[in-house]
Image (cartoon, rainbow, N blue to C red; front, top):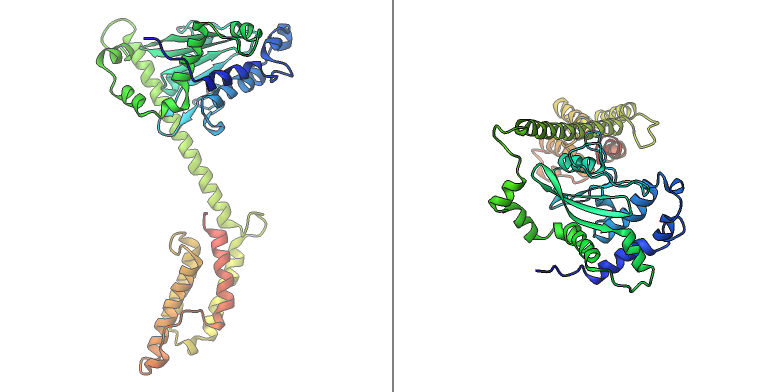
Length: 369
């Protein structure tokens, strides 16, 4: 059965990528007519940013999901677009426009061998290889890859040069359609696709599975795959550890300094303020009916708000904890005169100023936001 062509909007957008004046002031066909020495080294400026980036935009991947030069185990595929419900969708390997693509998957130094290495590294089933003049789409086939679409861009450019409405022959349209069908962001969020990939029939699964048994090369293939898996897990663990280290360093900076200027250290300031709060307590101790034990409890609260970052989740929680001690002391003092033992919902005037200064400084300096 013939596959319906890609949507007209996609075909139009695809044509515009190559026919607009986005290639150092010209369209792509004019740019390719320049001598090779004027195009050498154009992988990043032309193939990456003028062709593949806009193509991924057209396929529906937001810039933040395209993962340009994604670092994995010291390797950097040019693009590794990702969607949350699927993970990494496919990888893209780009070469400059002067290089013919080398396509020996068994040779890790060839362009296709490099793409295949990235596909294995990121455990994806699709890979796109391009030098701008052609796009080749590959899928995993057991322990190697097979080509599923080849688009000769230069041939399409020659046809489009005759007019923007010129029709492409079936082979070129089919290649563009395969890229749209297999690589669009929407296809990776399609429940039918995920169901097909999860519930693949036995025969297709066996054709793609790693061969086992005692036949030649099987053991080496298995060892290589396991080594790559362990290395990927190790790299992921190192990335998680690094994130924790960065979070710890950020927390230590927030704990140490009063604000983001990193100029005034928090500990001396908080110590001085804490002593002023306690001094105000001592001055009003008799009035409040505060025992030495209750004063010690408030002292512990003021220490905990700095040392225990989850003990008091807000300034209001800190004030409430201090009020609870003061109201307990008040209730004991006026046990025989209940009408004077009504609970207060505010900090006493003698403590208000110092406590209100201490609270925001504690939370600004010591709480990781």
